[in-house]
Length: 206
Image (cartoon, rainbow, N blue to C red):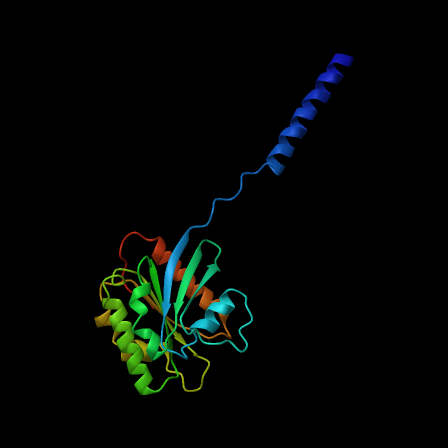
């Protein structure tokens, strides 16, 4: 009788230790993939503020980037190493020096800008889409400052920038953005991550 009791106790101990091992010795989750992304746009577009908010940094009194900065922006399924390039006239001519190694592009524009600035943004976006080091990469185009009364809608910007003919055959997303709705911004970046994960070219989307 005592042998049966001892055997039962031994089996219970084995079962207990097995469960404990499964609970305490779980394999660590696989590392999230990392992608190198370049972020460009004219001064005042709001690049620095958006990236700071994505990193949960305080964006009040944000100073525009005068050269370049790099931020590791974490998302649930990936980490984006975003290289932000300043948008001043004295810096734009050096943008292409920082394109090498990029896997995706974030282009931020001020949707409340003047016609002259909007045309300048359009020209810069076209140059980026045609650049040999960027032309095959997915683009996330953020029409920022959508909370401004003077902001053009996403559909107006798409028409103004002539994205359908100019970006035909490329992978791109056009989304509105504002620091007052970071959930929508995160969703736009999640769509970019999906494009980065894809191996085949997909049709353009809004």
